[in-house]
Image: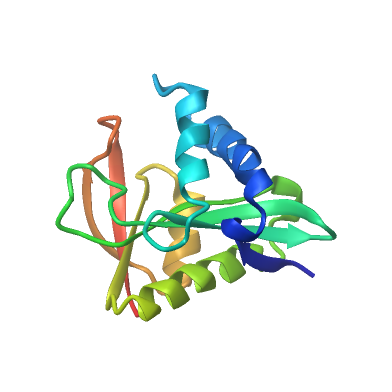
Length: 157
């Protein structure tokens, strides 16, 4: 059974989370890996956003998620953002993503935010369906940070 802890509890895993993020979202962009590692090391401090959580199962990291003040540069008016939800493929469909999302929702409530946002690639039907089934509502399409079209979703807490 997986459990979710703040990255602060497992600071040595910041590089692992950065590697997952780099492989999933940054390897085709001009963002260098060391910059991604630096950003995850900054998330170890949970006193301010961004903050990250790591899902652990049998003593190994299997997933991650972050809460960020700004995740979509063109929409600084929307905040905070659920970001970087990732579960290793062999651990998917076990509820780990839901556990991670719950931690972000709990933190947003503790910080008195009435709503959360996230974005997905517009053409990622599986991921868009995943969030819709969990109560996230489509807001609109926008240009993403890399100029590709993304779908913005919101969740009223």
